[in-house]
Amino acid sequence: MKNWAFVSDFDGTISKKDFYWVVIEKYFPEGQELFRKWKAGEMKDIEFLSTVFSSIDQGEQQIIEDIWQIPIDSHIPEFIKMIQNNGGDFYILSAGTDYYIYHILEKYDIKGVTVLSNEGYYQDGNVHMNIDPGHRHFSERYGIDKSKVIQDLKEEYETVHFAGDSEPDSHPAVYADLTFAKDALKDILKEKNIPFIPVTAFEEVEAELQRKGFLPHD
Image (cartoon, rainbow, N blue to C red; front, side, top):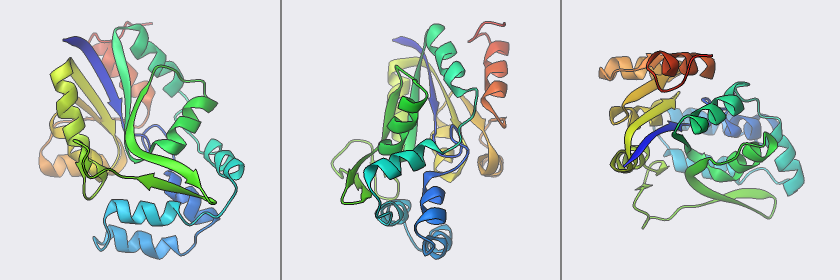
């Protein structure tokens, strides 16, 4: 069995802005109403995202440049290296799409990270999602079932830590050894009585992992 893994959500956790907001604000104002419907439970996550991502109508280079503008936690490249240099594997687990995640990793020259997400690809001016209902991690609502992923990783690693920020992250938090929660996830986990460590940035995550002996002190 491997030693330990750190698994992080992407949108709103590693990034400071969800890619769907970039698209809505720049190309798809109608998405504001869809967002309200989604939050009211009238649309599944995967329906909302598929609609937004397929409403960009731009050349691929423009979309990549928009992706590059997404702000991320400034400490994350260093944090990932620190995990990897201290016996841990780093995973990004996202119910968005790997298409924009790979472009961000490339921009910041982040290597050795495994991305587990809905497959995305560019075609005819838009980003499309390739969802496989036969995949073992398939979720009808999210495309990928984060809790199943964490349970599988727990079979592989002695310890699995997780960081997230929103409702889809409340499900894997049940199975992680330590959950670091940002933003809305804090209230959701509190309500569900699931233990978590509240954080606002990855520097705080690093300090907690140092305190617990997973990472060395500076």
